[in-house]
Amino acid sequence: MAKKEWEKRIAFLGPEGTFTELATKELFPNDWTIPFKSIPECIEAVDAGQVDLAVVPVENALEGSVPLTIDYLFHEADLFISAEVLTPIEQNLMVHKNNVEKYEEIERVYSHPHALAQCHKYLYYHFKSVPLSQSSSTAAAAQFVAENPELCVAAIANVAAAEQYDLQIVQKNIHDFHFNHTRFFVLSKRNDRIERDEDKQQIKTTLMIKLPSDRSGALHQVLSVFAWRQINLSKIESRPLKTGLGDYFFIVELLEDENAPLMRGAMEELRALGCSVKSLGSYYTYHQK
Image (tube, rainbow, N blue to C red; front, side, top):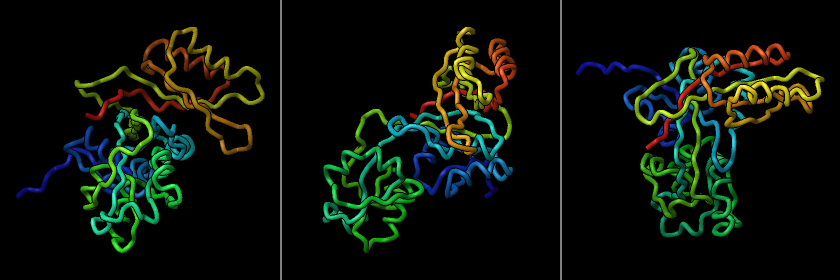
């Protein structure tokens, strides 16, 4: 049998069974998907050319942005966003099959910190005195539970993780709010867009902007650059520059193509104002089915 020729190598936050893997396979069902242990490892893999693309989480509807992703893209890597995937998140409590009958006596719950926070109310009312332990991903928590059947512990993860590691779901959909989605960026060294005919949403552009120092009203000037051109902002957020207290850069998401004439004019004006601007490119959003 001939060896299969893969079109692309795609890094994702592993291990197998993470929400990131589900988002990756939604957009790249026929490509070679490779798990990495952390977000920085995924980003560094594509930056070093070990893989063609990397899929990493960037924001959750309940818990907000993933700072590690944002900061790494600003401080460490020179990459572009080729697409984003919006994935529905359903969290479940699962245990080793040896412990199904005594799951209400679990001694510890493992999961990613965002997942633990998304299930705060459930854990408070059902397992108030049970310690919580953070894992690098929900699937890593499930893997730990599977590899330690002698421990009466549980993981919070998705159905795919339960199937991957042969765990039993004992409580379904335990997240606190119904609308729980996570955004994932598809990162590339090239400023290319992934375009599919189905489910393509309005184009977006992400900029990282450092304001000129010691100028009052600088942020107002930046926002005015977009306002008078009627370029809509879908998000603005500040992150520390890591140079001292009170020093920030801004992540701005705009509902416009970076190649549009008004956007090119906006970029020129921002630089004329003394701003440092890093564009992560323009991209489309796709919804996981």
